[in-house]
Image 1 (tube, rainbow, N blue to C red):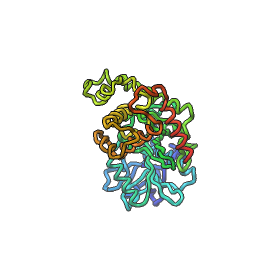
Image 2: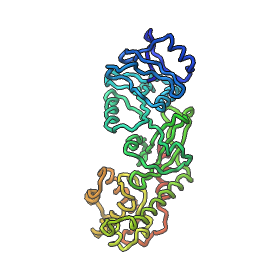
Image 3: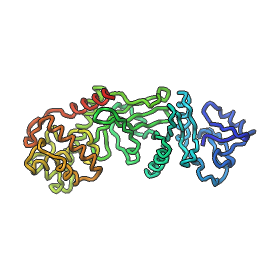
Image 4: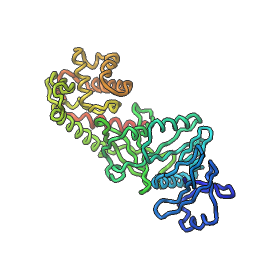
Length: 385
C-alpha cells in the first residue's frame, strides 16, 4: 500500500518525489499506522521494489489494504495518481469507502463526480469485478478500469494488429456511444514500465476470440481528462484492417476442408456441397464484417453462408424475410441471441442495399465489399461523435 498515517495522524502518500535516502532516514524517527485498522505498518524501502507500506503482522482489519501488491501495480498506481494530480484534479489514493466497504486504487473528483479508478494487473474472477462494480453503482459512482497492457501489445509498433482476447480482457472493453448506428469499442490499457497508454479500438472480429484492430500509443504526460478517444483510422489503417480480415477469411476457407474431420457432416461444408460451390470460391458478399458480427464465434463466412442456405431453402429472397425467420435461424448457434439477431438483420440489410441475388453465387465475385464497409463504418462513426 502507498498510504499510511504518521504518529501525529497525518496521512502520507509515497510519491516518486521522495528519494530513497530521505525515506530511509524518515523511517528511523517516525512510526506509521494503517489508515483503516490503525495497526502498525512498516515502511519498506528497497532498491528493486518501489517504496511501500506493509502490515507488521496479520491484521484483523476486515477491509485492509491488499498485501503483496506487485511492483508493477504499485508503480502504475503511483504514476496514475501523479497524472491526475498534475491535471489539478482532487485525487485520493487507496481511499476507504465505508458505505460499500471497498477501496479503489484511486478516487478522482471531476466536475463534482467522484470516479473510482482501478488499475488491474492480474486476472481475477469476473464475479469479483461485477461485485465491485455493483458496489460503486450503488453509491452512484461509475468506475474506470485500466488493464495492464498485454505483453504482445507492449512490444508492438504496428498501427494495426491482431489479438486474441481472453474472456477476462473482453470484460474491460468500453463502449462509447455516439449518434452513429455503431458504438466505438475501446480497450484501454497502461504499461507502467514505459509510462504509456495503449489503445486497442475499431475491432473487426475474425473468428473465435481473434480480432483485427487499430493500435495507438500515448505517453502518460499527454493523457487528458476525460480520457482521450482514439482518432479516426487513416485510409492506410483501414486498408490494413481490410487486408488482415481478407487474409483470415482466405485462411479459414482454405483450411476448413483439410482440417475438418467431420467432412460433409460439418454443416458449413454440407451447405457448400448443396449449393455446389467450393469454400474458396465463395463470392465476396459472403464473409463480410457487418455490424454485430462479433456475436458469433464462427467465421463470418460460416454463419453468413448458413443464413443464405436457410433463406434459399424457403425459396424466398432477403427482401421477403421477417424477424421470426431470423429468430429461428440463430437458435442453432451458441451465444448472445439478441446480438446475433442484430448481426443477422444487419447482414440482411446489406444484401438488400447491394441488391444481391442470393441464387447467383457467380455474381460480384471480385468486388471488395470489405473495404467499402469498413471505410463507411469508421468514417461515419467519428463524423457523428
